[in-house]
Image (cartoon, rainbow, N blue to C red; front, side, top):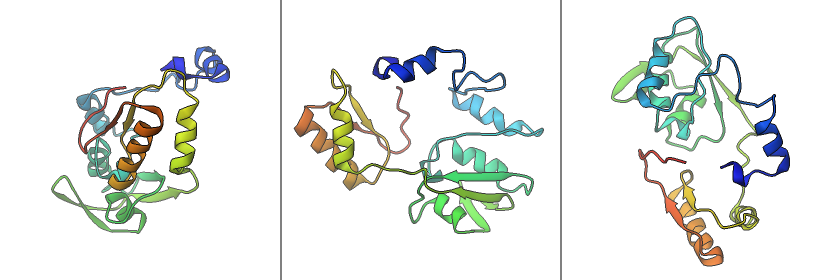
Length: 172
């Protein structure tokens, strides 16, 4: 969606120092490709959307890697009570992932301050600056908050808003 970039973001995206043009970076679009990462034994940095570690590919990566004491897991962002991410942050020594009990031997680290969630008025203001009112897919947050934001976007801007269901892949 480069049409939504401001001038500086577009310059960076098109420039020589593109933030995602790294010689060893491998993007995995398909689940099978992502699962292949778990066969690497020489070392790797896996960056995966967390969903508070409750959904998506991160569960497979954690299941394969939490048991190894040589591994480090860095959790960035808020982890709600009752989520796998919160249990790891709180120091759980055993967790259940995809029906399997896993001993946590990996080192768990947290990075605070990067979960700068905007409140509803800030999100509405931000969306109000877009030309053409692009569709909105709300894929994160608690159900009541997502429903309230969806309603506000529809009422204020006539926005097309979809609330993604857990476990559903959203193509952008």
